[in-house]
Length: 442
Image 1 (cartoon, helix red, strand yellow):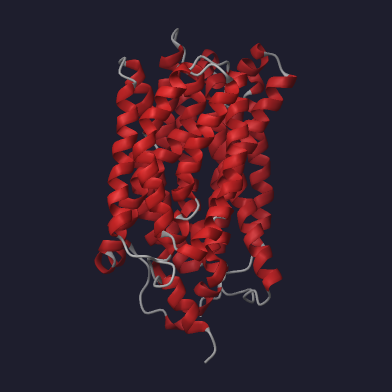
Image 2: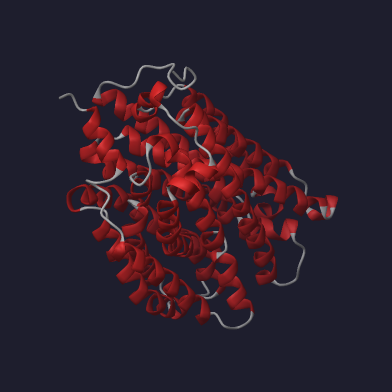
């Protein structure tokens, strides 16, 4: 019996199950707040770390470190995936938030380039690598934890809260930005105000560490116990589940490009291309993301009724057909309300992927290797495509061919659409459904 994982009794009541889901989701929110603060405040801290006369060049350098942080995500997914499958989902979630806390506090206290020279961007890079390691482990562990903790009938609904809290983390980061924009002058934000959100994230992560230490372990992991026949490792994953590994990477590729494009890069697009002020762009994205967050459980609940596959196909078709027209419309939009409606349309489309991608991946793998199976191929695809989306977008703009990025996003969504059309439905035939059926009393 794995005593490290099984110290707590499994939750027996619906109330206890719900509390575990809420506790896991709250930790996920803080983790993703820390991750997205970097993107939300790039326009303010980029000059402090990257002295340059051209705004696009500064953003390009900051985006490069944003992308490099993704390099650590497969490593974090591998390390934390193994840890979660051997020691428990709860233990891995506690470890990941510790790393995120350290990275956030490091960014908050790092002096600027004017003070310590090249050491400043080097420390920023180190902190971002730590955060990448944390988030790489967070995604798989939280996706599996929420999917396993939820019951069969409402698994899509409850697992969607991974993206509810992921988006909420981004939304809180933007709200902190809006508040600081109201209470601080522009020069104060550029000089030192941008450090405040990183310090807040570090402190919140400490609180989440203690919260996660009190969470219950999932029934799926506890039931492994002595019936475990193999230890989770990369060789076992690739040898026994090669199709599922490739499937996770393929279905992630287009979805992660669309997600980072629509939810992260659009803020900079509204400033750098559409011509809105930083404040207006932040308000537009805050309102759009709040609407987007509310859509996730609605779509998750819908997947419990009609299946996961129809939602992913809807995302693929709509995304492939509408990305180029949406970006062309955003290029020339001048009214903030019109911009908001266009951004919301893009986010409605990507909801077909984000609301259910976690549970779909969890339904592909058996419990003994589920976290590694979800986390590692997802992190690889996310690093290759999601982490580079903003850099690719700014590079196309830098060379004067911004339209090329619109077609790049369209092509990536189209490739994933092929996978959605050919893969099997996982709601009733996936591993989690079979585990639930096996656990029911005869």
